[in-house]
Image (cartoon, rainbow, N blue to C red; front, side, top):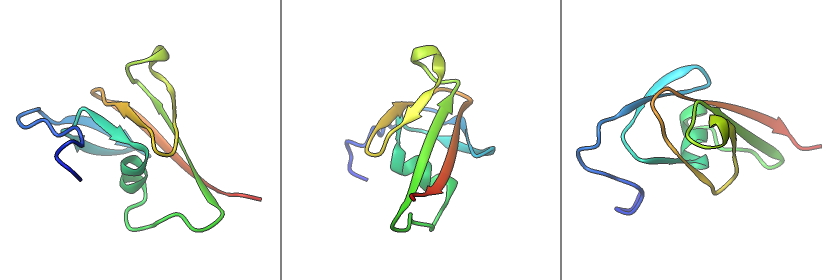
Amino acid sequence: MSPDDNNHPGKPAVTIFVNTREFQWDKKEISYEQVYSLAFPNQPLNDGDVARIEYSRGHYGGGAGSLQFGGTVKVKVNMVFDVYVTVRS
């Protein structure tokens, strides 16, 4: 990660949940790739696989939405991410 990846020295970590597992996150935002890596560490997507990431308890649009490939979302305390992997047909 580069210094511009939303690092804020001294920012307290908040608890987030990814596929029901608890993580501490100390950055202002989290990316699609970072959420996927928390959900499935050391398991890259295979050709033809697609990861769908949905979140709830967030900041915008009633606090729920989808995180798209290459996108980021602002992190909030107790935010929940659900990551689903499917095979394209």
